[in-house]
Image 1 (cartoon, rainbow, N blue to C red):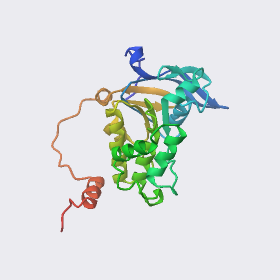
Image 2: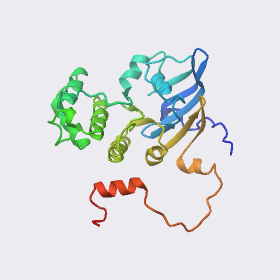
Image 3: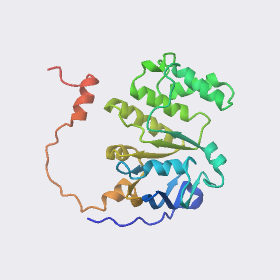
Image 4: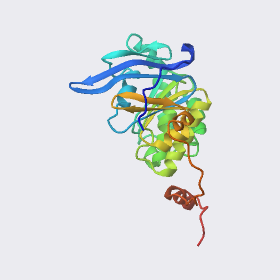
Amino acid sequence: MTLTQRQPSTLPHMSMAIEIQGLEKSYGELHVLRGVDLAVARGSIYALLGSNGAGKTTVVRILSTLLKADAGSARVNGFDVATRAADVRRSISLTGQFAAVDEILTGRENLVLVARLRHLKDSGTIAGELLARFGLTEAGGRRVATYSGGMRRRLDIAMSLIGSPPVVFLDEPTTGLDPEARIEVWQAVRRLAEGGTTVLLTTQYLDEAEQLADRIAILHEGRIIVDGTLAELRQLLPPAKVEYVEKQPTLEDVFLAVVSGKGSDA
């Protein structure tokens, strides 16, 4: 089945935290972005899906002012990324594919350090509130070198929220994490949106987008080819046939049941 090019969003302009029109980027003869259009509503989770090399990280780098587009326009929190870069940077936080935490410091010290670098008052209180918010209070006094992958990622996201940025970019946040750690990160992302933060999430994991996103876009060969809610995307395929199927637990179901102690004692 051939999917058609998405139509521009009809949502009101002021309700958008991120707006992109006709974004293009090339590296020599390699055309990475070929006219990307998308709009992300405030307080929502928007998942940008695509295989490796599809251009997801390039989009995020342009939106976060780390890279200049060759053509097109982009606005974040109402600011043009090309002409109001400083305002954009004050409005966002970017969490890359690998946790940017200092392993020598404790979790609390990492948070206090970032708060002080942002010239915020009462950095200790800020650190304590974020440790509690992300379920890291007990681990706050331990060196980050002792943290699991999921704990480091949660700390990384917590650090990105210092200063209360209205827009957060999460670039493949669960790459390399085990099933338990992925679920921990998913819970942290849900809490972000519940608190009113806009989240642009790039991922190549389909189940991640299905679990988290209010809207999902697929980036393929430099263009957004579909964009909609999960229900809308499902309508692109023929209606499902109702059949009786005995569902067997997946390996992930088995893994989570066993490690949580809920599996059979046999």
